[in-house]
Length: 157
Image: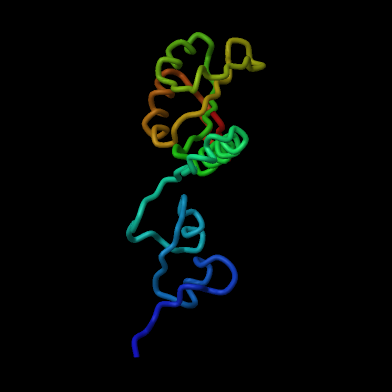
């Protein structure tokens, strides 16, 4: 008799039960953080997917339904994100801001706020996560200090 995989674990997250019940699992994951938290590791990627909005032609002609579809699309883009973005904050002397802005991407322009220390400002922006590692040395070379990278829950464009 052949051994069949057990596809439906009763109640709760699959990765929590992996240590007790199986040698390996196939899991749909966005970041893998839950897998790492349960001391599991990704050994191979079987499939990569992106969200798609698919609308019925008749429904798309209805302005109320089209608005609802666009609202749903904005929620998916902001939450799951076709892009993963992070916030970046730093302090810099005012005299070095122009040099910093040459290397600092932003949706429009970064936010610049005065610090209580005269001659210094705080700069804040949102950038694609994949460029942070390469960007930070350039920011430090431009004079940025106290650089903080933080995750974002949602970015709506």
